[in-house]
Length: 253
Image 1: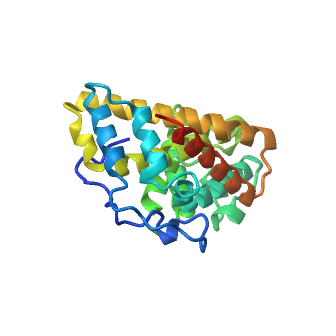
Image 2: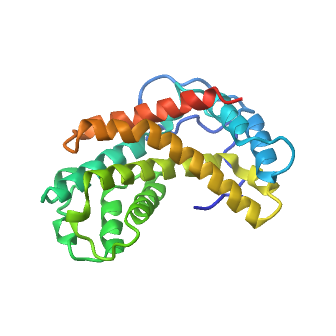
Image 3: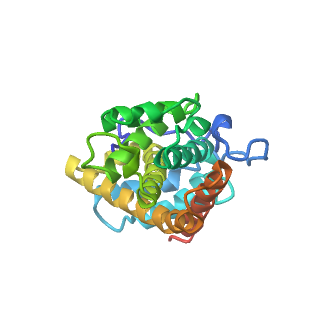
C-alpha cells in the first residue's frame, strides 16, 4: 500500500469514467462538475491530519455522492478490474481443478506448478492485466492479494487453491483496486497528515474499512454460487458488490 501524496490527484475536469475503464460502455455519463473533489478532499484532509472532527466516513460520503458522481456512476470506473477479476476467479478455479486456465488467461498456465509462488502469480497477473491505463494497478492488486491470502506458501501448487482461498483472493483483489482509486483521488489531501506515522494509520484505517465493505458484499455472494461460475457472472457479482459499497457510502455523513 502507499499514498499518492506527491500528486495533486485528478482535476474536476477529468472524466468521471475513462472510456477504457467503463463497465457500461456506451451508456451516457453526466458532465463532471468542476469542483467535484473539493469537499471530499477537504474532509479527507481533516481526517488525514488526525485533528479536529475530521471523519473518514464523512469524507467517503462526499466521495460517493459528489466526487465520483454517485452510485449510478462511480462503480462504472472499475470495468477493467471486473474483467480481470472474472478472469482471475476462473483461472484459479480451473487450475485448482487440474486445468490449464487457458480459457481465462489466454495462455496455458499449468506449467507454473512447481515454480515459486511469486513467479507464478506474476505470470498470472501479467496474463490477466488489460492493455490500458489500469494494467499496472491490476497486476499489483493480483500479486498483493495472493501474497496476503497465502503468506506462507513458497512454491505454487494449484492444490492449495481451495474455494475459500480463491474467494479471499477475490476480496483482497477488489479491496486493493478500490483502495488505490480512493488514495489517488484524495491527491494532495494526504499532505495534511503531520507525520509518516499518521499517514500509515490513515492508510490502514481506510484499507480496513474498504476490506470490510468488500468482504460483506462480495464474499457471501461468491460462496453461495460455488466455484464453477461463468466469467460474466463473476464480473456481475463484483459490480453488484461495488454498487452496494457506493450505496453504503452515500449514506455516510
